Amino acid sequence: MELFKYMETHDYEQLVICQDKTSGLKAIIAIHDTTLGPALGGTRMWTYASEEEAIEDALRLAKGMTYKNAAAGLNLGGGKTVIIGNPRTDKNDEMFRAFGRFIEGLNGRYITAEDVGTTEEDMDLIHLETDYVTGVSAEFGSSGNPSPVTAYGVYKGMKAAAKEAFGSDSLEGKTIAVQGVGNVAYTLCEYLHEEGAKLIVTDINNEAVQRAVDAFGAIAVGIDEIYSQDADIFAPCALGAIINDETIPQFKCKVIAGSANNQLKNPEHGDIIHEMGIVYAPDYVINSGGVINVADELAGYNRERAMKRVAGIYDTIEQIFAISKRDNIPTYVAADRLAEERIARVAKSRSQFLQNEKSVLSNKK
Ligand SMILES: NC(=O)C1=CN([C@@H]2O[C@H](COP(=O)(O)OP(=O)(O)OC[C@H]3O[C@@H](n4cnc5c(N)ncnc54)[C@H](O)[C@@H]3O)[C@@H](O)[C@H]2O)C=CC1
Ligand SMILES: CC(C)CC(=O)C(=O)O
Image (cartoon, rainbow, N blue to C red):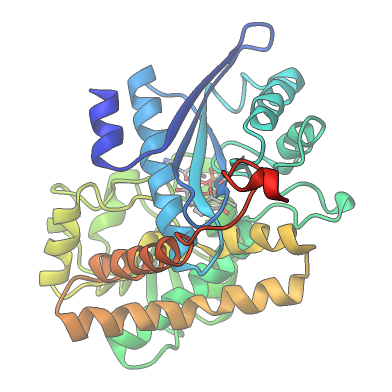
């Protein structure tokens, strides 16, 4: 990858490579855009095939956060971290403390939280070194693990998508194929089961599958079988790029609505599913519940206020469908438009001169 060329093409601000030999920390912090405010985005810990793959993931996820935070109406920019390593075997306390010190060094340009492979306990360790961390344990007055709230937002967004596709937002009797039954999807399945949906699940982790089978009477299918299920709704809740040339021909669903980040392998795949008449709830809008929840901590956490805002994902998804129909564009383009227009408006309104200690007028104070 030609790094500077890539960063220039996609308007990235900063890429920070952090290493700490003692703890084995290898982290990449990507900051995409801070027009709206400090960059907020989670930390993913994952075993990447190469350093290049890890850098690319950090960059792609950080850009997604810029759009997610903008579309959610938050005064926050976009950033993300990936830590290279196996979250089951490679963690130690010093690693997260060292990472916390690197975040502190950015002086508030980047605020972190949980993502795949990191937990509330990891955030507590980061918190020993910096206040620029959210999703810390409730005992610190924090909102805790964002996953259940992300699930609530996905549930609300899925209902809005069902209304668009089937004329009613009831999920009772609908068959929903869920890919990955981890932190977010397990709670999502709880909501769906409670409303009377039939669940089909898959996961690379057999224990996670069994838990969903036992708790919700879900039907388990193989990893590669999930795309071709006779389901009304496909809910991708594992990793990204699962809407691609291989999977699209297998889809029988009318709706795609799930928590995974970066679901479209390439933008063209969003065009293809749009032409097929599949109602696609854009990933970074439907999964913004977690970030809305942790962002609320920055104003002093109020759960009622946060949940009300997360429930608003229903309206945002409806707004995106309306833009899509009005402008005859795929829903992912409509979501990008919503986010980009907000960033452009704020950038313009913040371009006026304001006196500060570095300005030529500072000695006149
Ligand atoms: N946790 C949160 O609050 C948020 C999560 N997301 C996204 O939602 C997705 C899920 O996040 P979490 O539930 O937190 O992660 P998680 O790690 O708890 O769950 C992911 C699950 O997917 C499974 N999985 C991995 N590869 C798979 C494959 N090829 N096929 C089937 N299953 C597979 C894993 O075994 C795991 O059970 C991720 O893409 C994450 O970035 C997005 C916004 C917020
Ligand atoms: C609070 C986090 C879950 C934010 C984030 O990284 C995300 O929404 O992907």
